[in-house]
Image (cartoon, rainbow, N blue to C red; front, side, top):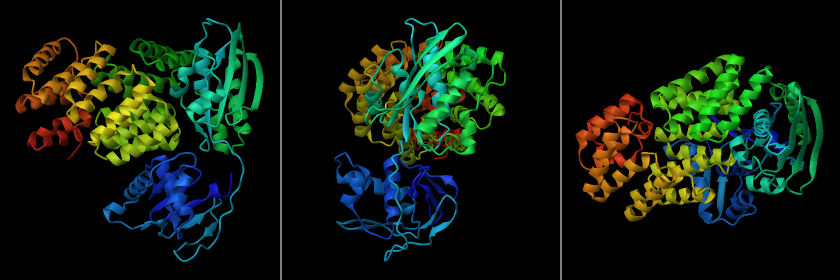
Length: 594
């Protein structure tokens, strides 16, 4: 690592770690989008000196053409994060028509805690930095290992071993690892690793073949440099299947060595950490993750059953409990479990995982996510912060923390946090769709619609983006286009009632009361036999001007922990009720004091 990357910068109550890419305020993490962090680092490195706009833009976007407005927005977001908009100390000076200058006193400390620079001021720089030119690779994607035999019944091993390696390598703070959700789409195909690396925006790709023959497992693996396609490291292994743990140990350690990563003693232990020694339980866990990553309702049920069987074989298998928690959460989202039952089970499974291993960041994020939907706001916030501290490379932790920030009205921070998630998993449909959600609840409907369209360019069959695009058009008053988008959404998922109540809300807002009431009556009748979002029904009633009926359904939503409820603080479609004392009382009981 270069001397430059070892520096820790301190100013006011803040500390910035260049290597970890973290900004702390009095020890608590401050969420910054990647480019906003880069802006701060660039200004601090030249603190006391004027940094011209063109020079700063060249450093931030070396290979892209961007407008000056992008830089201005970065500066604005940065000032908000540093508290300048709240009247706190000013750190960034704008020099009209020229650029920016960091004017806060900066103390710079090396990793060995030796003081390097006491203070920089406007007038002079005390010490110049030494910059190393070591060509270190900082990002990697691990592709699903390809089974050598077509139709192999052990297909799950390919994605399973990749998932295990991703989990191990994610423990290294000096490298960014694309998550399993980002690479699952390459399962069952033979993609060009260089092309995949460029698509995923990483500098290296790990690929391999895997074959199980009797009681043995044969693995061929290579690490490829995306820049020139050269193999950085390659190896063949032939071991007993019961030694698959040793194979994974060897691969993860040799990848770290090939990438010239400085691995601490604690990180070395994490690379070799095993969550079970029971090979049968491990196979069930791999199968569980294989099915979970496919995300359909039936696959999620199958995955949950695999995790339960793994736990039966090894009751101390923390990762299996975390997988079970994630399965319950997604089954609720798929409307396959009632919210109250599903999130209760998700929370219990995550808590068990943490009782076994409190350092498992994924389980911490799963628990925080369940607590969020259970309206345990303080616990959820602390849990997400802890999850990110334990595993900053886990995109779901950043995604779900963004959900928390959005629900509690911290929309600027929510947007910054989802940008971190997108940096880690740039092609994730759900993460990119959530960025549209944040923009929607921030009342930035045009930008929200544009974001959903980008998601649909990645996958035109993604229901959540399609129905959210319809929602954005409805808020813009583009009613006819919204109907078209709702029809598309309902064709993708005919059994979902979300499209029905949203269409009813659209008609009510549009002034088509007859159509709206027909849909409303149908939903109320269906709610007698299946789960229909009470909050959705309440929105239709509110749009029809029936406030009392709307509050009656909101009370039902409160009783059953309807998934729509935790956005009530920022929900624009209930603005007509916001001034009513009953709405404020409801927010207070949920814990979202307005």
